[in-house]
Length: 125
Image (cartoon, rainbow, N blue to C red):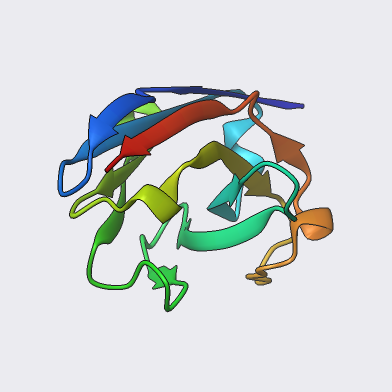
């Protein structure tokens, strides 16, 4: 089992920045990649980006490319989502997730094995 705990959400004005953290515990050696997703009210959960646990290779959705950056600190078993130039449409609950399927990177939520509890990000105009 892997446990994930997000932190760092809050309210920020448009154009501002926030950094989310996702701390992993348990069988972290089984993680292949960590993904970030977000879900706005009444909408599906959407892929933001991911990072492979060992190599640190990243990928991003077009909607956040150039504004959001994913990084990790393996010593702390923590993945970060740095969000800059935030827009009101970035308002959502943000989730981190882990996949243990070795060699597979995916943007599909149901293909992730473990999820954090989510953290609210609100961007005001």
